[in-house]
Length: 340
Image (cartoon, rainbow, N blue to C red; front, top):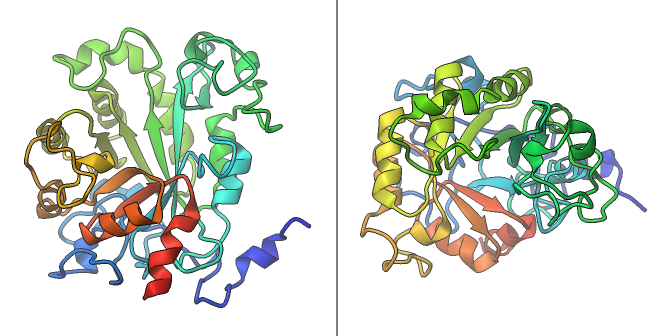
């Protein structure tokens, strides 16, 4: 029998509060953990996806401060594409399921504090929530998503799940207002450059569709964080809506990521797991010898790491002091929490 909303809204006996009681937090982690060593496993740390200014006010406008509340979980749990390996990724059904549950890591059902989703434009300029440029790998419809008419995009079935690619508006409507939304911006044109670009303004027309993304997203009551691998997209978001929190997705170079973070005064740092020094996952052959967590925290910025698949990775990253965890499975935070 399917669980009812009432069943998942109650405490599970391990101190997990209901979905209604949970609030995402975009506040500066230092506001609540001042002077503390960040997050040895088993310590109580306020998870944070975006940062506020040093005076305790939201760094990027009114949107950044909505629904803020300290939490006692160990890090922000971010449902990657709506817990992509648990539910049909980037679908309304996945977002609805990911948001259900408590915010205590020991809860039998761990609800997402934040949900991450990906956006592309369709050929008609509508905003679709989907991860891949090519639709054929995940749906029953072939074609490049930004070259495909909206009618075909939004009727494409995802992984034989009975669910279709949703619009951004449908997705935002499905996510409760007390759950934050990290919108990952993908390239809507072959004419934009991945990573850093010499002249972001020269790409401005190719990123014009982000005006619709921002209009739809900011019409919600959810806390928001826009993130992207494309500097042109980051520059466009800040040009259109400077009050909206944004983060650069690191790739290839820690120093480059820090340079972009500083230049654009972003609200968070979102690196891959193998950039976190002091963990068994750090790739010292690929990256500079930089303690990214220390550098981020010196800037009062949270570190939100992607993508974690095992309980062991969770615990090692928490020892290293990270603030947010992009997860495909919610349950992997449970083991370490139960050991407390």
